[in-house]
Image 1: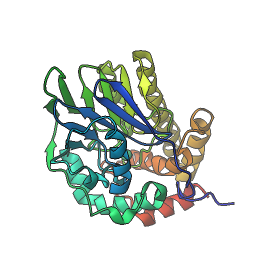
Image 2 (image 1 turned 180 degrees about the vertical axis):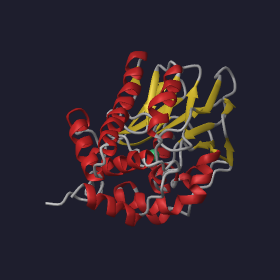
Image 3 (image 1 turned 135 degrees about the horizontal axis):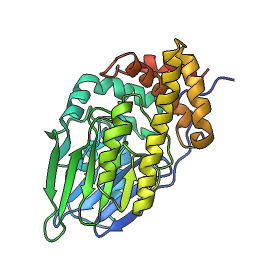
Length: 319
Ligand SMILES: [Zn+2]
């Protein structure tokens, strides 16, 4: 029997958990669905990530409003993917901040990505007609952007750590309580989506930089909150291991002149014992293997995923 496409058959609601990690630092996790966060300043709130639609984002804002009524003035987008950005309108934030390459990617392929992700993960698009259009950042930066939280709250540092899950991922580092919002650069017990990734950069210098923060709390793109230095390093290394196994398996098949399907099967066999039970593993793997293969072919800038290309690769590899 054919496997249902991507996450199209995953229709069960996930339980959401809002956690207060430190004074004014909130994480909302959802059993493997995309995570989001909020950081309180003295008289404002910064939100991290926007979910897939304004209706979905509003449900999170309603939860946050049980804890603070300060105005949400800043929305930080970790990267360009639709399920992270298209809910932005709900926040009404004056400052919508992203990396300059994220802006470029939205301009270049935002609509294609919207169509692709809607097809792959329809459940995340709660009331899709509430999306007013593509989300465009109002402010961008290339290296580091610091927001003074006011009072004695210290700084919120937004930083680019190199190419990884996409060409333009940023992290949010809450200095005082040592909380790192890592976006999709790290997943805690959820499979990695790497269809737009730079596997060699990501599994090398980029993850090294994330480790250098010495975080006490890490909130990845999906999965639960990781607490304590040792566990944080463990989550980062688990992410690195997932990528390295993919590189190793795909590279071997590519080098001997094998096929993409053979590379997929070898990678699946190698990863499944450790990672196969994680959310979205089957969904992600065809797109991930295709992108490793492309990098080995010398395709530096990721090819655009369209709803049609998604189905072609899926049918070739998962059926
Ligand atoms: Zn992503």
